[in-house]
Image (cartoon, rainbow, N blue to C red; front, side, top):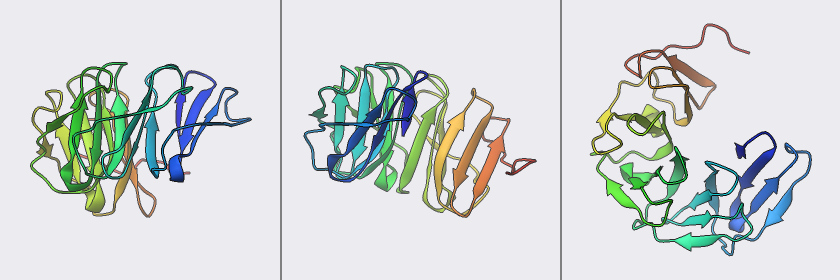
Length: 199
């Protein structure tokens, strides 16, 4: 699920399911995706532009808040799991076999980036237009500091699957994964440690 602004949010699921809320989750409405794909993730950089991703390289896009969704060409057959946009033009997707693709035109076209790996990547996040991280199965963590042109393997604090990531800036971030795995960094991912307090 993704929230855009204070009250607008979207959630996706199997058989092309897309739900939207405009009241902070108190009520939900269905949006027609025109797809039967099992959607894995959704991202809205703002209230208007949104993207949903699925297996076999399927990417859906909307530019009117979800009233109309259309399929776009992704140039990959990989299962796409993660997606992140830093604004309405620049975004990345990540998936199986180390797949990372970038778009510089609001999702209209996608170009492959070479991660030199084959891990199943489950999420991706860019703190800005240069610094990004992707992670996935067996504790895989990749990092880039040039907008994704080059990716490097980063030291992982666990071998558990990592499925979620968030960065405050290029230095401070958190990753979460299986078996209640939670790790934080304050040095751009060079080292990771469990949080001091857990709920």
